[in-house]
Length: 506
Image (cartoon, rainbow, N blue to C red):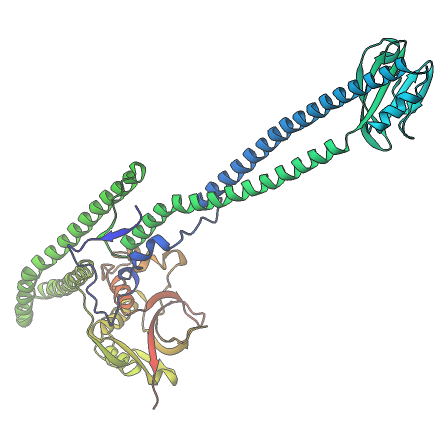
């Protein structure tokens, strides 16, 4: 499951190339999904970190365990070999001493001479109640009393580790006929040096093994997380409107479950959304014919209004108002269904912002709305669809008229995006209503959402589609819309449209 595919059974983005759709209709390139890292959760350890930590700790524990076991076996082998060699050498030298004592005068001098001739460096002889040492510092003073008693008095060959000249030594003692004894010191410095070399080698091996474990863990983590990243990018593409996004099938028995389940979910979601979109479109189209008939009938009745009694005239006024509202609702539903079907195309042209807004306001429901334009904004161009942007302005004015509690004001200003060469223009519509609570400022741009105060209003104007269409149109132009409080501190809402623009010379 290394790539994400999209089918071509149904076009999902018919926006012309020169004017890409923004917001919900703009999805990231799906081909880049396998190289895009998945953001890790800020709370706790991510999957990649947990895999890497598992490999690191596993390799470290295994390396340390093997190092301890290897050192234990090596130490035992080296010590045992040194002990065997030392006892064999001491036994051989004890035989040399015994032969020297038997074949010469009753004194250890000839024996010492023979030992020096064969290269013995640290001998010690007990003969006729006297000690004879071969080198200063290796004498009876360093021999433990227990070792002397066991070898000399008990006549049992023994060995013991002692410290002589600040170094550890292995002393091996052999009894000799006639109550004599032979002792020899074997330094353990070579053994310790060998063990130190082994320890250093094992420490380096542990570090290298752990490093290899970390590298392997990093590789395994990337490989393990990659399918999750691909699925995340595919889900993001679907959320952005590309409902035909699918995961490539895989032969991996574990990942195939994820891929098949994801694709089944995407198929079900696409089918349901397309069915709902077709339903709204079909209903809207079916309603247009009887609605036109009803509207024509209302016009006929309105032409003979003077012949009606007063109560009939009041009923006719209510009917006209509801028919007009019904017509607006049907048109909004048709427009929404076009967005869902991906059939919306922009007829882009250059628009001088200030002049365009003045024209849009002039044909709106409140043509005398106050407009304030900054000097720089008078010379700003935008590329957009005149009809759709005029619909955006009209919807915001209608929203302020219906829910804003009185007259509205429009301000147009130019801003420069920080750290970028992009110039933008802001069109703000302010009203004098109760404002929009912070927890509803995103909700008001959803379909059929009219805010928390909708149910408390006496008027039933509006179906909750106007601001949703504003959001859709603005996003298609590469801009964004949001709502805040008024800047002057008074009660009311401030709806802001921000669009990419270009400043021109006079």
